[in-house]
Image (cartoon, rainbow, N blue to C red; front, side):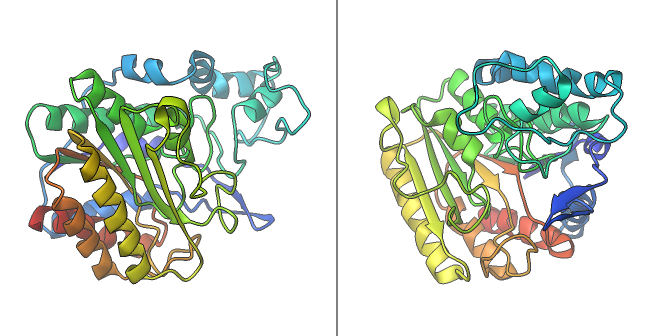
Length: 343
């Protein structure tokens, strides 16, 4: 399996994250990728290539143009305004406030375009986000050209990013763009399967009223964990999209038995629908020792999960999402890929 990887991910490394009422080193940090790369090489999965240039056309088809402009110019606007530190949202529109009027002041604009203030923007964030997107796009082109699968080692991740908001460490929704590219290249039906511990709220919101992209997510119950406000089982789509959004929320302490049952159900429903391509939001934070999650999967469970996904026998793009048990993230990620290839 080919891996697409860019060194430019290093340009995004916020020095602080607000967690538990204090500033800590961000859980989403560059070293996550190093552990994945090292494990790929240990396992002789050395077809690792850089991405081609990013193509903004499919992104512009999905995302709000004002949001894209904000991401591109936020750092310069922040510094021009005399701000000294990194960009962290301090003011956000709440119930009863205007949601349709965008502030001119950069401090207000940041809050308008952000849905989770743990996520900071730095000087290199825009470049890193584009490089992450480029990895996903290159992986999609590789599969669309006839390869059975590809792994986009995306950083920063993407599945929490909506059409006009960032958060959850995500700025551009890579998996959603890949699905849109499959549609544009001729796939009538595309499925996105999100196995990250956290619900892919951004992906859900982007396709919630569409019947050409099915979204299925296995995640921590939203009443108990981030992103809190989406991910309930009764969110099944609206309009043309009714029935094409599948949520599998699970409570604290969930182990592989219940988790794999949800995976099998999602796979069965996806296969009954008959997609022509599959996008996997590959988060490995369902691992038992992840610091910001509460499932109890073992490393070997990720191999079995990959094998179950591999039995779907669909053209598949993996987009890296979460996983914050740093020393285990490489093993768990590569276990999914090896299980997939062994199916």
